[in-house]
Image (cartoon, rainbow, N blue to C red; front, side):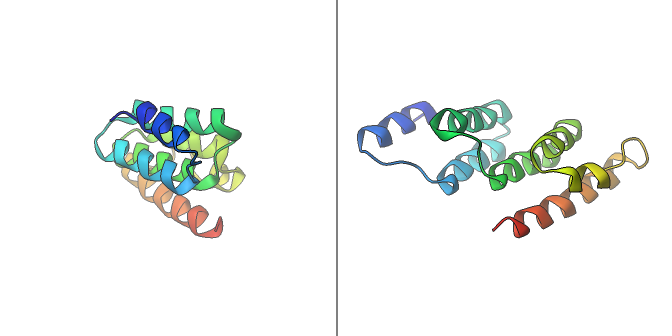
Amino acid sequence: VSFAEFLEEIDRAGVTPSADVYNAVILFHAHRGALEQAERVLDAMREAGGDPPRSSYVTLASAYARLGHMDKAVELARQHLGETVDRNIPAGTMGESGRRTLLGILLHRVAHNSH
């Protein structure tokens, strides 16, 4: 079942998915390496009711970082998780491994402070 079909089914049932459900689907796609599909989940969240919560951006940014897409991870974090991440990820001043580690620490902190 595709995510679109899943949304149609739950819509017919009169159920509104929570952010946790969306995040689980983002994580599912990320674990499969299907980042484009994970991105579509964020788009679906926007269409369903505005800006996704920080936890959704943390989930996707973490997936980007895990799969080696550091530029995308940092850009998403900068755009949606605030200047805390922006100030703390110095471009070009450390190796890829260092940036990945720093981004992971910051995303972990943002995730735990957003609850």
